[in-house]
Length: 402
Image 1 (cartoon, helix red, strand yellow):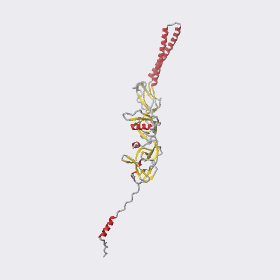
Image 2: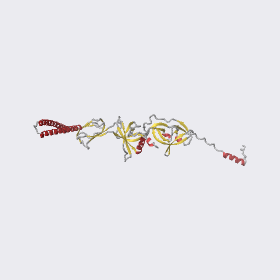
Image 3: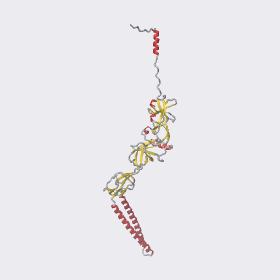
Image 4: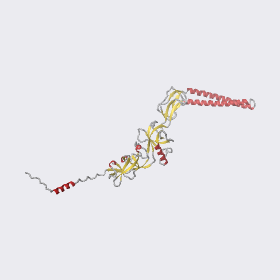
């Protein structure tokens, strides 16, 4: 038989004290979490130019509707549809035989008028000699002088008719008035062509390709911005200097075509509230075609020194943009900032930062205002391309000024 378990014999006061001591025991507090690790860097400082982007339409510098200047039957066509033609190239020939016959007749009449003038001149000279010896009357001498003057005028008229007939013969050969790409032939051989009037038959069209114009429309706010920049001496007016312009087609990255602004209209369109501007671009490879849409960038500011950071270091608080700046004690401070465009892959910070600030560029979502952080220094990578030239950035326009 086993021995009975010992019984703890406590008095009532001792039991109460034991229960009180057990109730007062508390669990130990959990250790404080380590400060979050973040990456910080000073803003990149660069001289930059902001660029405004527009959608433009390419238009030929020269555009010609080829029409006949004389009427007649179309005899031959001397070009291939859609080909490049040079100024002076033969395009069409209208049957020249009726106009050659007119030229021959006018030439004969000119020779006849010249012979009549020779005869009248001889008669007038003879009359002058006879009048000196009183062999003829003064009335007869005056008549011969008038006859000589009339034949002179007839000869001038005949020569003018010859010149006009020669022009008509030349007009039967229709040549290219400009160098460019020709359209298709709108009339085929054997058709009767009407020429020499406002309703003359349209034969084809030609557009020049190199150089080429691009028209853009700037709204009132943009126009007023450019005017103020010009007055402040930060960006010269495009009416006075050749401000650069860069162009890209729909399938091109970046802005590979460089030209300059060569025209700004003299008033805003009252219907659209926009000001028309025009840039001109060299087109040696003929890739820019009239009628295409294009993206165009022009300087939207003068050159200035900007502070820039990556977009991932920027947070959004409702409609407010902000960054966290780490102070000397390793505390994250909340800074409201005003954003500019993206240039060189970095966001321009218009207001809210100083060059010496340490900005959290990675780990912003782990930081809070007035929170202790564990910062790690890292330089912001910078692209090699200059910050003064435009680049492809579809978000720059949308985010600028936020």
